[in-house]
Image (cartoon, rainbow, N blue to C red; front, top):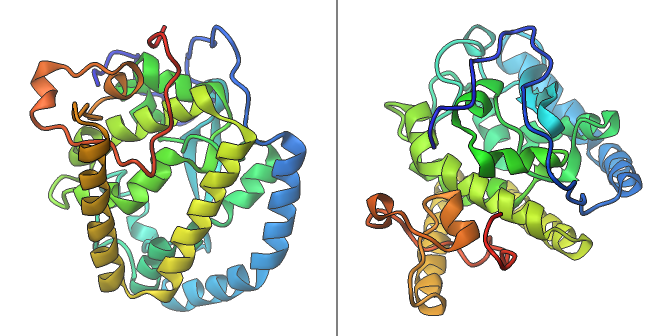
Length: 294
């Protein structure tokens, strides 16, 4: 995606200049359902959060909660909460993208990231109205300013969420496509276009049923990661990726690639990318609306 969307936002900017959507897409879950799920989930996971907070303080000096600037609905910048998984001195140093086995991450933090427990404080963001339970994953303001085109900006028409098709893709397959030698460049090249394509398709086709399906898939992934070792998890993810690609080759004989959001939404494959493209994983894709991306 080209870097054509304006200057990098400064540290005090509260909103990016994002064109308003022509029509406001519906959020799948109504606001009252977001609040109800977040309250119940916070009550259920509070012992886990307390234990994790104690373990973080014993593992690494510094605060328990890490705040990240992220871009929400209509370009509004907000602070997203996470359990800290990096040494405090490393949080603001190096790449904005964390690679597999990143040296900045302390051992217990790596387990928190693998199980996604570090994301649980975002339930507070849901209560505050910054996020929804299901919605496109929010990105860093600099990445949005430099790398979001028209399709990427579609994902800013709704509240970002804890989970989405794009975040499931990143979790199950995208993590393995990030090169430790240059995490940010490989993320922008290998992960972000497909992630945005999946999330933009979700925005166009969302429904209450879709949101509950995504919630069930997410709970299944997290549960599996809690009971599996990192090595077993990596083997399972790799096997699942191979199986789903084989399934996609059978069910999509034209092998329509998903290297860019335009492919996913419009069914077109730019010649310069089609040779490197891979089929879209069936368990993440949702049917795009007919009639193109207009």
